[in-house]
Amino acid sequence: NPHMWRVPRDGGDETMVSSQVQPGTWASWSITDQGIYFVDQGVGNVPMLSVFDPASQQLKPLTPLGQFPFWMTVSEDGKRAAFDREDSADSASVVELEDFQ
Figure 1 (cartoon, helix red, strand yellow):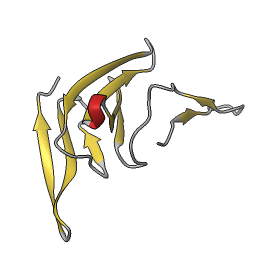
Figure 2 (cartoon, rainbow, N blue to C red):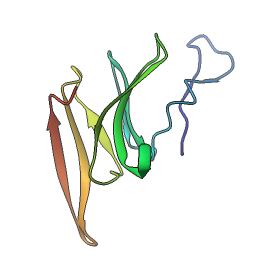
Figure 3 (spheres, rainbow, N blue to C red):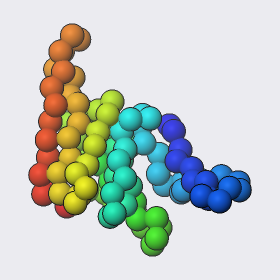
Figure 4 (cartoon, rainbow, N blue to C red):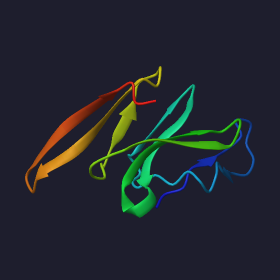
C-alpha cells in the first residue's frame, strides 16, 4: 500500500505522516481541515473509510464500504464522500455517502 509523506515548505527531509495512513491506492484519499480521509483494508479485509488527524495522531474508522474503490474524495466540510464502485467488468458507478461520521 502507498504511504503518505510530508516535506517542510522551506525544504528539508521528507517524513512519513503516520504508518497508520495506508490508502489502498494512490487515488483513495482526500485531505480536509478535519484530517486525511482514506480507504484501506480494514479488519477482515473489509474496505474501511477512515479519517486520520495529523495533529492528535488519532485514527478514526468511519464506515465500511462494500468493495474497495480505486478513487475517493471527501467534501471540504467532511460530511460527504464520493467513490467509484465497479458494477461489472465494463461498468462502474459513482457512490455518494452523506453524514457518515
